[in-house]
Length: 127
Image (cartoon, helix red, strand yellow):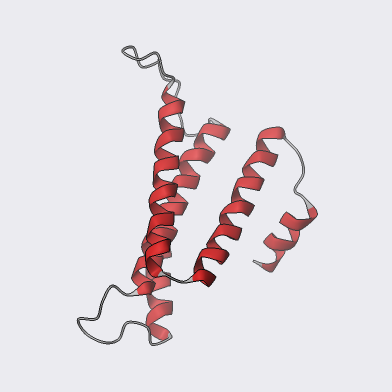
């Protein structure tokens, strides 16, 4: 649903109407926003232990399965930021950097079982 909303919003603003145009920024944005969402789900599952069933350690390397999940989440985050850079919009990068910072701050607070900060509440209320 998220990618479709981004694409439709871009089309409503007249972005990418030319047939055969170069990669359209609204389609790239739909992709990197979905990548960020996927990365946050992976990281959140590790923090919450909600969607991760108890798993044995990887026998061959002695690595807990949650470590692999965090690494995959990090990889997906990095791929999203590479896609953002390809859009070549400083404003897009600033907005997405702030958004991911708020997400990460919320996860840290959740992990520490602390209430949201004033900045985070203000950001969330602006919605």
